[in-house]
Image (cartoon, rainbow over all chains, first blue to last red; front, side, top):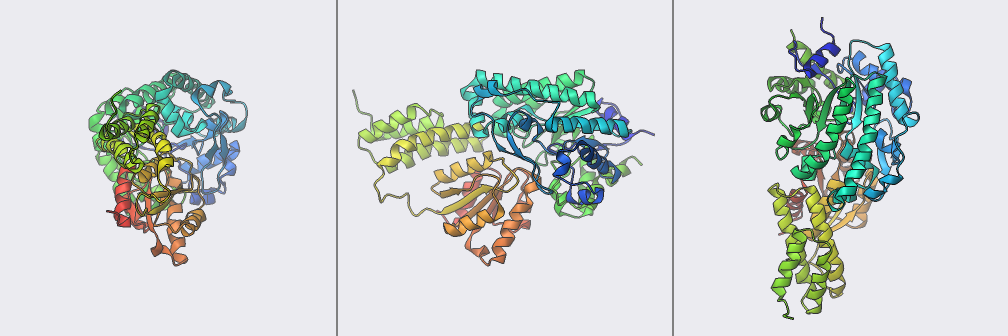
Length: 339
Length: 219
């Protein structure tokens, strides 16, 4: 019997398997819903700051038959907060999010302290991974990272940041290198703690925002540094990029990750045609999972499969109000493909 | 020195916005004012013209979000020079009012900022509530300024339901029909907008202006 872990690793290694894997990484791609919190008896926002609770909530995803992976954290603010941004922990329904910036201009990165991995939420995440590694088997443990552009544009005001990518290019690159070095440290620590798959989501570093030239210069360059570093430490890698890819497919193809994940505006068929040699993950509409019924969700999961998706997953983070039966409908459908 | 004609200066202002020249544009605007030309024409046929050209390029995927942000910097730099010279009673026509913000729980405001810029360019009077905006603030502000339009955005699936809540609260208060409601943001779709009872949805900032004009009966 192939375990879920073996299946995912094989897929990410480009090997043939019985059926697609079905995962939801966590991080930006949130998989915790209100109903899941109720069933597990573990609640947000407390679980964002407590390793035991974080691990238990991650376990509940697998135990409840939602997805075939563990994954932490459940937000995309750990890195930026550790670099000095002000962050609220949110509530049971709102994710933690950035409310204040650490610096006003790219050159001020010199005032930032390196990410402290021995305290705060970075430590909580690493401890949660260690607990999962200790107490579970058979399922992959996903360590999530927020991508370099998204972290950089959370530590400083994004409009200013985007402009300075062009107006202060050299300093912007120095800033990006600093951020990327911190992400590499955190990523390597996640791998060392027991994560065997690293998912990097960079929703603010899209082709639509940056355009092809700057997407290449900033997003691709620094995402690759992170990918290469964690891959060298033995982890498999998945990169999630938001928005339309049409203007940047040739640039996306330069990213070294083992797989790519796109949101719902990208059709799997198109992605498969444009990136023929790549493993593609996606992309059941999270809107459908939250608002429609199970039969629609099943239909969408099937159409991802028919379009050639190698790893079937929600297209984005799950809405907190998503009914558990809809969430479970993705995996239960994917399971039938192996029969 | 040969004096530049009004048309030449307008063209230059338009070009500088289009080419993201946020420093030299102030000089051209000064020159335009010193020559005694009409400031309102300068805004509409110079600065706004350049911004409109930029948005056409955006539609054609030749310009991207960062390009528009830099163009708008140049436009605002020009506006800073021209605006003080507008006569007291000058207005750019009867402008429609819109309240805009990013829904509670979300602080991603780049798209919202761009919509606001494009709406201002199109002559709307914008009331920007910022980001992470509590549900009730949208409604209070819209009532306070007697807005024509409420615009909400979010980039996160987890915060989408807040948009529905705003619309439901407007209904509860019996004032739903006083405002047009538009929603946007990457996880939002036409279908979602319809489901929650919004009047309009747009994929991007340029399209948002078209939708807003249609909803408010402008042009």
